[in-house]
Length: 105
Image (cartoon, rainbow, N blue to C red; front, side, top):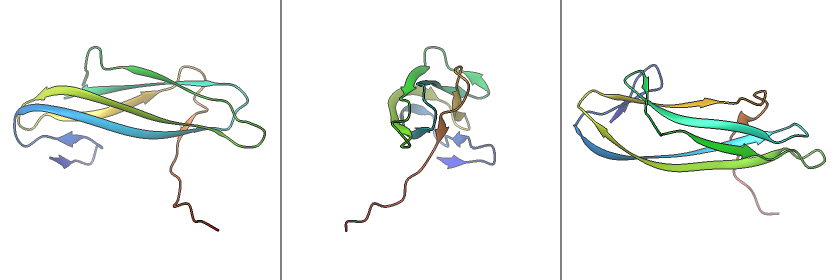
């Protein structure tokens, strides 16, 4: 498997694969934000691959956080591409985020 310049995963061998994603979201707003995540294969959406996640609102000044994890099984031919897609119908305030290592004090 490789990654191309379009952030697609390219399969070198045909077969059935389990695709797992783990995506961290942060929400700085005072309201919950919905996020849809789905898979696209060779430029077309994969039917029934969408999941909806609700990123909780901030608490005081602390942004709400959520980790979206979903395993999906797909069949792929050699040179097929897979992309992980995302959209937020509630305004798009929830964003992808990463957190540095937590250090003990």
